[in-house]
Amino acid sequence: MKQWYESLFENYGAQYDQESFTQGALGECDFIEKEIGFNKQANILDIGCGTGRHAIELTKRGYIVTGVDLSESMLEKAREKANAQNLQIDFQIQDARALPFVEVFDLAIMICEGAFPLMETDEMNFQILQQAANALRPNGKLIFTTLNGLFPLFHSVKDFLASAAAEGNATYDHHSFDLMTFRDHNVTYVEDDSGHKKELTCNERYYVPSEIIWLLKSLHFRQIDIFGAKLGAFSREDHLTTEDFEMLVIAEK
Image 1 (cartoon, rainbow, N blue to C red):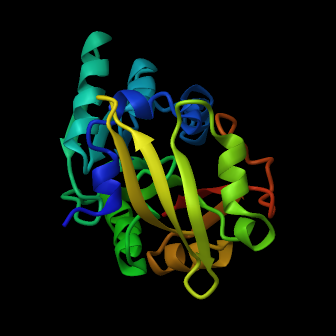
Image 2: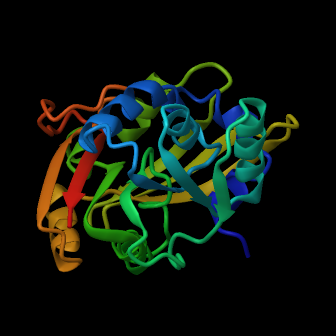
């Protein structure tokens, strides 16, 4: 039986690129470039690359990027977009819980809940961090965004998602946030690229900063910094608060 995140991303590439939360790639790539010191020799892994928006933009800027995703449908869209711009990018179908890479990359990115924290168990989410760590060379860097567990303690997730949605975007209902597991259960409604409506029962894990720090320390990252994640405008100046729906994590081995 397919998990909700597998069903969601089937035949959804074009529609996904219209979602409000996917519109920040340019500014996010500005930040990523700065974080690696504009080193064009850096080998970059984009985990949960989706339709390739970060992989394509970084390749256009002269970086070598490998994009991996669980969804063949999303990768097809990524390849189509790359080909249209005459870009050579290695897009691979891979499960982020079992990547084949060992000390290959200087940077791994997982932006906009690329894979982590969508998994159905905490162990699987941890496997994704573990695989990202394994893929990095010594002194490599991991940059990712994830759901901020401080936010739902002070706000309604349902109200936030409703306020952020644009016409034609995914909508959400029947939220219940479990304080024991920090998981938000909801029903998500989307329309795929063929106009078919889907109703998906979703389950996403929110993390508090101390959990992320502990998980990454256990994977031997030596420097871990966490900030608020502003769409298209990542910055080390944005201290994480309870107002941030997502957090930006930067970890160095």
